[in-house]
Length: 439
Image (tube, rainbow, N blue to C red):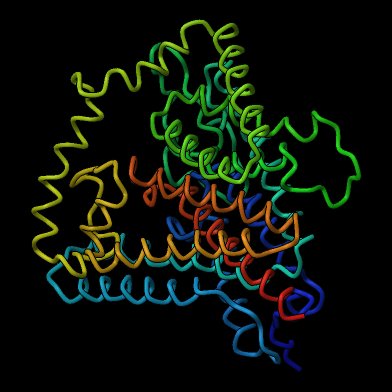
């Protein structure tokens, strides 16, 4: 007899007792803890353990939707994601219907598989989390995981080595080279388990709002009655310090975007406390690591003064325009603009080339819909935990969206999977609020 098909039930269980939140915890752990360069040797680029888990999430979600036995609340995010998916497939069709070299076909196909994985984790998060309590469990876990990853990054900064290049895992091989220790202004930039400090900074800025909401009390602990001050705040302090020491312009801007969105939900007293905490953090950095404060300020004061990073971004617009004009609506094909052609350092610009104006508009609609769902739940819900989760997830999603304007985030393994997961959780917040309203 064949096994029963998985089903998302009202208790949030999949199949016979496996909780979707538990699966997402495993996915987040593999995605953030396992160094990004490791893949299953036989599968090469498509063999990332996190990608394989995400694809399993997609299959499970599809089977659950087909075999479900009851109605379930949803959100507008599903419709926006369907539109975005359709336009990605249209761009892939455009690519395959024109003269194209083998390398572009291979990378485009692999990108399509990766996109399916990103959407798999997003959809399972959207429909599978059974309750506010389990949502809070997941968010607390991700905040703690982010704090541990930040501590590892600080260890890299202190020792001047990445260490992940010394790891060997049976059954896995290093498919993507880890950047050697990157220096800026004489300081080693931490990269954690990611492949580059820029990606590390973007991941930290997406996880930091969860840690800040936890510290400020917006995310109540479900299993501890009165957590200590240290337990509440250590992940946020570790991540804040790691972001500062990453010496990444995009990370600092992402931090500001996420903090501003989250601060809109704080009281005046909480905002003052947060500003005081930021000043205290910078003071600690100034005293403990002389010279780093000037390096951070120099990231922005040097803009327009021959900064090669800024110059490269400006020069990219003319190059991108030449490609966009060839196929403005659907682009030249998802994943077909190879890094050896040009690195734009702007994911939205790269997507304009690859999926065209229609695809980018669809992505912006998806972002706006996710933020609207989180905002709606925050304004309308009477559940304090759900409101705190909505505020934190809106800030995390906004930070990720802002970071994409400053580097080609979809070209990295960690950032897109985490970002789409955050948007899926925005949908989960909306769905849980709707279910509470209809009880």
